[in-house]
Image (cartoon, rainbow, N blue to C red; front, side, top):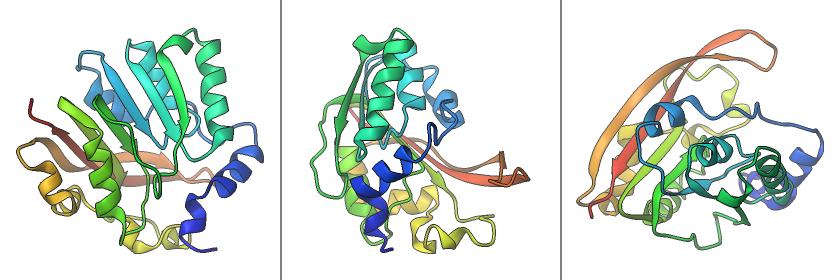
Length: 211
């Protein structure tokens, strides 16, 4: 399997279709920590998966556009939004990040654990930053290279991991004039697929675009 095959609709539709649930359904912890104090507005959830983040945001008054390459995943987002009474604040759209343009003008753009190909990550993250409207917030969270467990490269080549400082360098002039509010390695407890505890580091980048 090539790197790009991991980002196709067929790959993710198959993965989501093979089980009733892939992810926990809970919002990412960093999202809760970094966004809880922001006034609700419009949000773009990039690579939304089954919608844990999108539903959490909608439940707090945000108008969320959830995008993903997988229609199977987005159907689950829509169904959950309906079940939780936030359907009027959640819109879903199939978007192939590697090929399709992104909508823009959002008060918040967030992407979590999208381990992108290293050679293309600068272009893709610049496109994601470009979706932030004036005065809006960009929140990028990924696996920091520090402390990644042995065998991680079996699923993700090493060049898919970057520190927050490396992301700032890659974004370069896409962040010209922005305020870097958070750029750090943040530790957290996690659980491996076999149930064993594990300590990981997240690369957290939060930046605010000027008005």
